[in-house]
Image 1: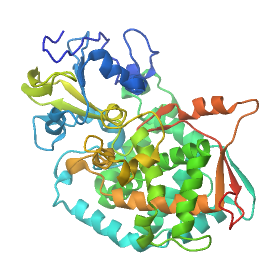
Image 2: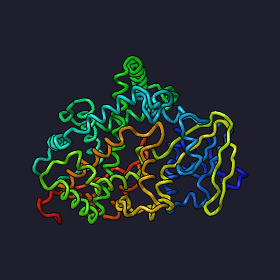
Image 3: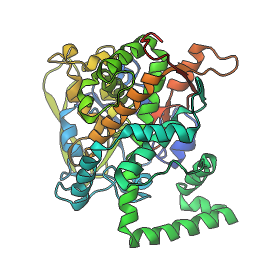
Image 4: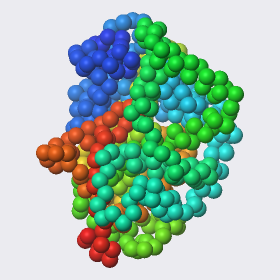
Length: 462
């Protein structure tokens, strides 16, 4: 047990728990807290209240495995941990899933993170030049491809599929000049199965030497050769990967608007005042659609997927960190950090900390307005963390927020969003089902069904 006065606590575990293949697949038990333990601990800021500190330790029963120390991002030591050049590095084993399709800002270390890297300069230029694109034409083509036509009611079984298609259309059009609306529906079940098998440890493939596993291995080896010989494919995969957090957040925004019709009416009024019932939103309208943006930022706070809900760094040598004492106690303690210790920066813990957000478990887009800010609670400063910080800051942040505001403005102007309940399902049951976190590579809401009901234009209450 850590003897420091910052009250770090010992939580016994097997070496597999919680962030490994076995920890991912094993049931939640006394030795395996499960992947969701930080998410579950966000309620009433339970975890950090329990430990009496904004950092705590998680030790392994297997001395061959690293121990974990969890920090909140606003903890002063966090800045040093996630810095590019420090005593901590991004562990390769925690980035394999992100690096499978090529180098990217979230998963890589090295020159790609330098401000002067050609990749960063190129993508900055691409994002800036694409801002003037007509997103309304993308929206129209998207609707036509979905077969909406003049339907008054449209049932969406999984809203995440819809938002993923839209964000893919936007980046393909604005970033690559491609029109993907004519593509047939992707076999998502097959893709999901293949991805799951791909990320299994290779010893599992050898343990079950079937033809299917052998074909998967051959395909992976073939793709690696293509990747190594084609930087163009690698750069393309980076840009496409960065669309996923936007799609996940847009889906969550639609769900929360369906659950909060009064907030939806306020947002609609903002849209009509700025764009009108038939106008085309321009880039200059972006700053005026503040209530639309507030919805997106609030959902991004509640489900911080853009930066990743966890950041992993491994100590490259024996070092020390100054960690603050528990709330109510002044000063800090110098804590020894052994080489190989895994530092885990908890983004969810920050966004649900009542020190920065009043009533953090409630959906309150109004907290992002200037009138709601106070010296101790400044959401806009905390929101920067949602897009990561330092050399890994999302360079597509502006692109993503403009894209999100455009989609929500055009969609909400034409349609009211309602929950689509299963047979015999109550609204409370639907809410419980869809708001549970889905932890894959990113954090988001669970698959949700919604209904779009066409508005009677000219009637704000429709």
